[in-house]
Length: 513
Image 1 (cartoon, helix red, strand yellow):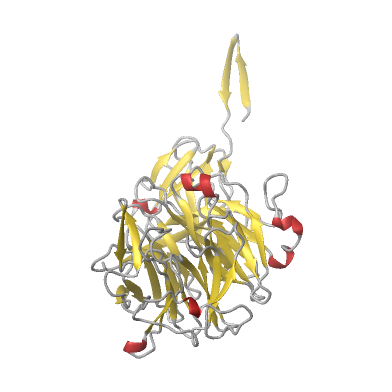
Image 2 (tube, one colour):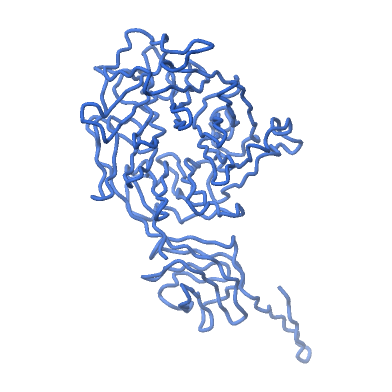
């Protein structure tokens, strides 16, 4: 900023010259339709006739003066605009008497939500979501007794009762120091749809339970095309305190994979052939079912094949299959990601930097790598729950010794990371990630019910240079914190569907073009 000095007689007067307006942030911004858009920067000056917010939509220029009712705040370093009715995605810039700012791409999204009906006998909370080819959405929940289904034709969510164990139940929880047996399962952390249209989801039991009661895990298949009595198949996992979390379908081998990270069984990745392994809707745990685990050397067709992981891989969580058929996993409490070769059983693990989060769990266990997906170009992409970072590595290049240790700066040289700097690391954490067909990576933010008010969702741009966040969802009606969880993308429309955990509903973002 330059200072002009004028001398009048013996009087010296200093005046500050105005500067051309500049906007902070990246080349893209996002806002809700008819919502507030906050712009920070410098040189905006005071409201006046010559200053304006300029919106360019498909060649149409809409100039909104700084004194208009749509401008709820105009100051030298911040402008707040209430987007007018009918505003669409396009570009915007700021004009003042001293110049014009650069153009910023503006994406406008309409937000709709759909309530999940309550389930009698529980307080279920939506965690994971998957989309079928016909547009149906399937929702897995914490403390769930029902599988939830969104019907796109009706625009409503319906619950489908899952086969239940006899009372008092095969799961266990610790509440206020008391151990109880229950039919409700926590850890409804994943749901997927296989190529035939069958829905797979996890029932992992009570989280890190280690009390005196059994706390079994299971993987459940629901085939919506099968006759009513045969739609559910419950695959009870051998052993106890298994802590089953993430799933992956292996089309090449026609097997289902799941991650198992409980206190009793330890750290495992398991696969099975659902057409040959026995399933049991009556939940018979009168014996431990260990005879269903494959013996070393095979055969592997009619049993659970178990791969033990290194000691540092505490609580393997989510899974992804790369183009070569290798299994990638996140070690939630191990602060690393890993790769399993099913053919040889060999495991490679990639350590992550020391956590920067101030959350208490992060200080003890690390950054909390959680979900993991395969990018359109074959890269492996994952998010850290507590540190709010998104990491990316190229599998065929991440094979050298340098990738298996941190360098002198404390980073892994084979992993590119981008961080969500707008998040409160003590309260709001990244939960789920999913790619859209155009190569953007969307993410959701999750946190405790109380105290977190900035939770929202956003995306990483295709060039992997910036993170774009939508304004907090707390501005919309709803009970409790607006924390978001599981994601599903409509490949035809680009619609982004997501779980709203505490508000017990699902949301949809549709870009207004």
